[in-house]
Image: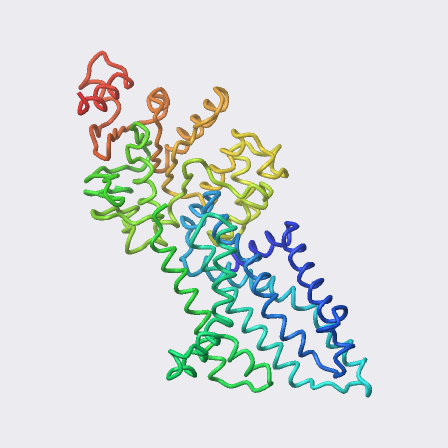
Length: 242
Length: 239
């Protein structure tokens, strides 16, 4: 598994794609946080990173599928999946190697955003006047959300040989998982079970973690969410017909 | 018997790609797996390397069942898939080290140096695989299959697309390897089978139409070359 993990990271960092995707993510996040007046922190008046954590899930919806789309789709298109699958590895080792490899790149994209915390920390009217606990909670929430989206992306990539299709499926599934359930729960027809449906969606759990309250229920939700999509990936790979 | 296939059947949706195929391959011999395109050669090889599962029947490699002990099977098999898929953006040495890592070999550098020497890749070892010619890529594929010094080699059309000089080199290498390993190679070039193989299995439309030592086959069909025998056997059902 470690060999697959290392190869994945080397492949991402060896190509320009990862740098461009991470660069665009940071650029867009930077624009929203510091330039665009509707969401910019300097115009907001409070020393907080709330606007970053509000837009980050939507940026992740595009960033993560762009990272994960090649993982299985490319191997299948080039035929190299046959090599991987006939080396002495289990399907799980391949999946986890690729999953953790992609997740590491997501982490790498997130790392430079810590500078926002540092900046806001020093920009506060009284230096250090920022709710550090909430920021830590939000970062944990973002990490868990990233882990879930990465699992979706890996699953989407295993479905097809075409990276663009993998990307589109992953964006849709991520969007639906994030806000689809919450929106569905607003349907009048579903009002009797609205809280149940809303709690299926990521957004409710993400917001709960972001408040700085680390509840085991949210943790279990995120872990089982990722696990579900990884198990689905395993099922797709096990039924290979190509 | 290092490879034992019994009544192997593979059905793709409505089409029977492999129909009750049985044969054995022995150590120290090269078995040629012959058949027209689409006869089911690659499918049998994919089942033997645990890439796809069979619909029914049984296959064992070195005593390990492909369904029950897939990891053990893969450990003792070196496989060169059809079309030789490779990571084109990796360097030759990097790729072979990666393959060695997959087999958890303790001394990767030594194994990589050994196979590079074995398939004469010395001059190209620092190049990107994508920059190599087809003949050299084929050698990289072969080097990858040999990295863990496997007892069983399964080569799917190892010489397709090579020029005559490269053909002679690769065939010589396969003969050499066949002396102390079990080798199965698929091809539809009869001269190649005659030059390299000890045993021959001819498969047509998923069924075995001949399974014998090359010498015996030539006794059974006196005066005929392998090519004529092949044509006789593979067109017999169509007439």
